[in-house]
Length: 269
Image 1 (tube, rainbow, N blue to C red):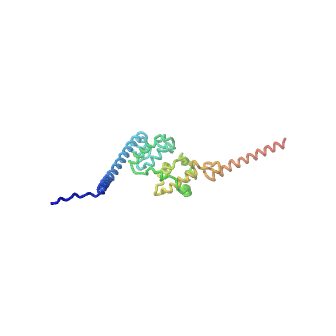
Image 2 (image 1 turned 135 degrees about the vertical axis):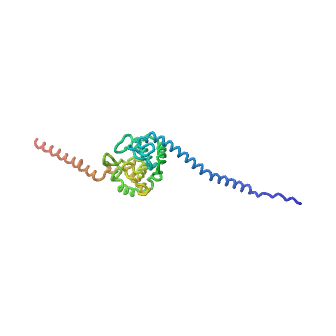
Image 3 (image 1 turned 45 degrees about the horizontal axis):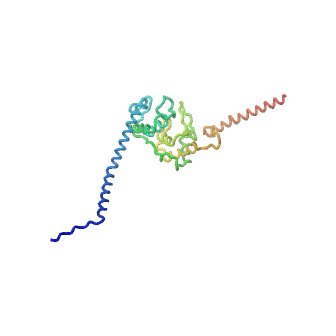
């Protein structure tokens, strides 16, 4: 019986086998890599929470309670979210130096990594607003005119028309918004710190917040110019008119009295 001759392999067979092997390897990577990444993220988040808990125990628990439940010296932090922590600690308002009508802005004592750890721990106590991304609070492409309209409707009663700040009752005040970062302005609108009402996305959409930030940057930013000269706190025509009457008219009266006195003295002599 004649032996069957060995079949010759197709020249592309080796290439096909190699591609199948690579595809199998890629499939295995796709199957396991996301799980590994998720596990690494969970581990990093757990470490951040643990470090944040240590920082909280030293700097915050005396007022807000050992578990963030609050006390007679400080409100509960359950559900305030990471944005509230980033704003309050990132502007130096917390930890509070002493009890008073309002927590003023002061020098920040924590670095950003520690603030993020504190925020991670507070977020673990209950869901709340998260720290916004740069895309959310960047004023690029926003409607400045719309932002001015929204600001005058919702904010000017306390912060005045250009965000210069103003006095409230019982020793409280609306702080000046000059020099405040867009991220902190966004977080303040999200969380409503102290006397300020909160404006969540259900009340004021993200786009409207960007518009307000763009307006404040236009009228109260580092590059803002005041073509009228002294802006008198940006309080508007009432304060400017009062200044004109008191100092302008008062100066004219003083000059008139001086001229009359000099004239009378000249006539006597």
